[in-house]
Amino acid sequence: KYLTYFLLSANVFVFLQEEMLALQYTFTDGIGLGDIIQAFSATIDTTAWVILLLLFELETRGLPWTLRSRAALALNGLRLLATGAIVWSAMVFVEEQEWLDAANGWLWIGVVILLELEFRVPVLIARWRRAAVAAAILLYSALTVVAAAWWVQGEWFDGYDAVLWITAFVLLEMDLLGRIPGSSKPVPKGISK
Image 1: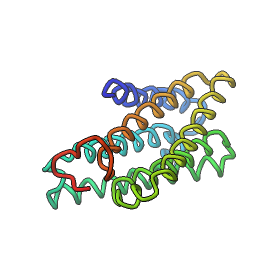
Image 2: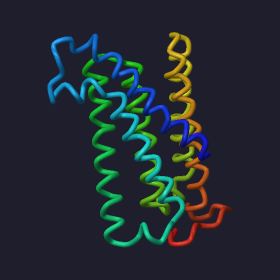
Image 3: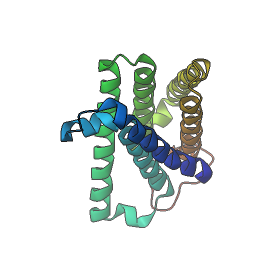
Image 4: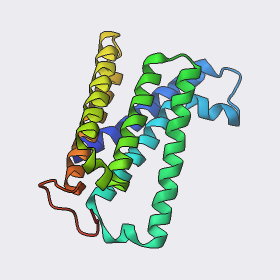
C-alpha cells in the first residue's frame, strides 16, 4: 500500500516535469500569475489528490494527535483546500471538453463522497451496506473503464496512474471496512464506530 502511495507521489513530479517542458510551447510570450493555474493544472490536481489520500490514510489509522483541536482544524483546512482544487480541476476538464479526464474526475469525486460517508456516518453506511458496496463497485468499475480507455488511446502513463489510484483507494476502502459496525475487522484506537 505504501509503495502505491510513494508511486503516486512520484507522479506529481512527472506531471510537473511535463508541464514545465510544455511551458516553452504554451506560453511563448511569458506566463502571468493567472496562467500558472492553467499551466500546472495536472500537477495541482495530482498534488491535491495525494494530499486527500494521505488525509484519509491518517483518519483510518485513528492516531490520537489527529483528534486534538488544532491538528483537527489544520487537517480539515487542508482537506477543504485539496477538495476545492479537485472540484475545480473536474470543472476545468468539462469546460475544456476533455471528456475522459472529466469523467475520471467526477467519478473520483463520487468515490470521495462515498468515503466521506463511510468516515462521518458509518452507522448509515452499515444500514445501507449493500447500496454502498454496489455504489463502490460501480464507481471503481467505471474508473477501470477510464483507465483502459487511456491505454487504448496510447496514453499509457495516464492509464498507469489511474490503476495506481484505483489500487490505493481500494486498499483504503478495505481499511475502512473495519470502521463500519458489524464488520469483522477491529476498529483502530481513537476512532469510534
